[in-house]
Length: 152
Image 1 (cartoon, rainbow, N blue to C red):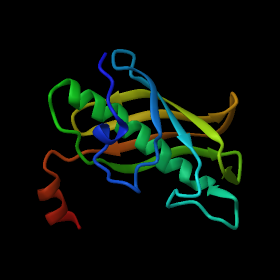
Image 2 (image 1 turned 45 degrees about the vertical axis):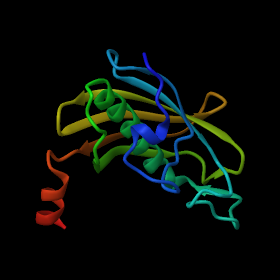
Image 3 (image 1 turned 30 degrees about the vertical axis):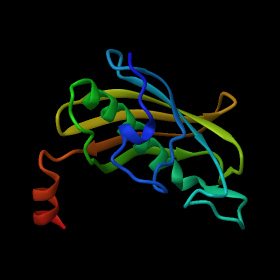
Image 4 (image 1 turned 90 degrees about the vertical axis):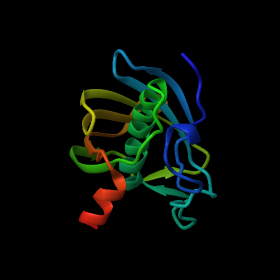
């Protein structure tokens, strides 16, 4: 499989890209592993905490899903599009802060995915210890411009 830079997979621009690398991906199995490295240059970094508040896990999970969908799009010669988190079920966070210079991995597994709706089970961990987990539901409109004009 071809390798893509995260900036090719996500429709985001720095500083809004939080995924450092995609470690592995299996489109057939619907799985992806991504890496996040906490740095003081991160837009969500809080000096007073010495890291990033753990509620950022939801965005990390969403971006890992975006990498999976973006990779799938590129494999079909499509440009990766914008998606929206509809919500999450069972979001659990087990650490209050993701600390500076720590490396976290995210495993996502597709529950289902079609052209506009998707659901993924997500686990974020450090040193094989789970720090957050959730099922994330997302929506990607067919025409983002039309969607934004009529819904925002």
